[in-house]
Amino acid sequence: MNTLSLNSKIPLMFMLLVVLIGGSGSNTLSGEVEPLSKLTSLSTACLETSRVSTCRRALSRSEVLQRQAASIGNYACQSHLLGLGADLLMASFNEGRDVSVKRMLKEVQILCRDL
Image (tube, rainbow, N blue to C red; front, side, top):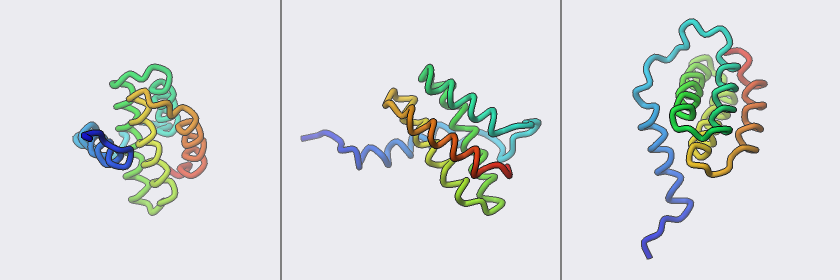
């Protein structure tokens, strides 16, 4: 049988995430006053539309923020942003991650206030 199990699909999805956002640019959000609010609006739009371009922008924003979180040692924030990125990736494939993304966004708002 030549089907992929869920466990073998997860690493493939993370590789796709890296490819999608790998060359996204700098590690800062220049000129962005409220980066978490922008992440929230992009993530919500991703859930509502499942548009690849919108989800990609949300993924890119979460990647930049998770790097910032790591650089200041806020590992709880970083790990939640990585989880959010995985959920956004699944949402872009119409995999029904709405509840998970919304929960993760609430946690990110609390844990990542210092970004």
